[in-house]
Image (cartoon, rainbow, N blue to C red; front, side):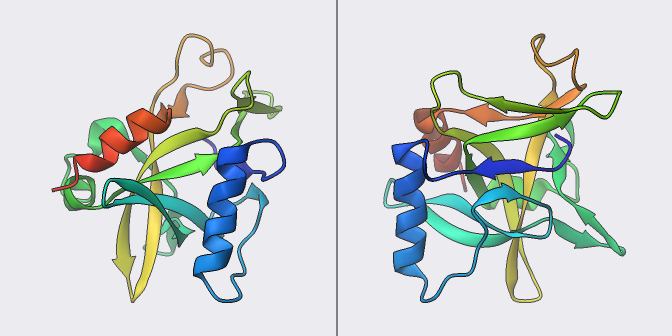
Amino acid sequence: MCGRYQLFDNKNKEIKKIIEEVRLRYSNPDFPVGEIFPSNLGVILTLKNGELYPELMIWGYPFKEKLIINARSENLHSYFYADDFQKRRCVVPVSGFYEWDSNRKKHYISSSENEALYLGAIYRNIDGTNHYCIITKDASERLKPIHSRMPVIMNKEQAIEFLSRNS
């Protein structure tokens, strides 16, 4: 995943409900809706009492003057990510995401039925603020012509199952 996704509340009832919950929960929330960039405040979901629970976190782990926005699935058991993957999983609700091909052409990937997509992610607290990192894997056959990597995509039921594995 190259580093951008969309969160629109006008195309999907699930996304609209999530955004409304965040606005009710946080007093005067200032978070972007539309195209989300690394380092933006983003809506993520954790699991509380068996239900998806929306929260706000910053996209990207600051590390040595860089920002790590993606975690390769094959590296989740490495020292750097293992504790997050075992104890701090989250999912990122999106309307769709972007990939750039080798010609730097931007492609928007979404559900053909305009359903919400849930991207697997992990998070950690850094200096008192929660930051998340989206999990990527090798691209599917459909996306390989565009890019070699893609986010781990789930439906709502799979997202709940993924989150229920937190230790």
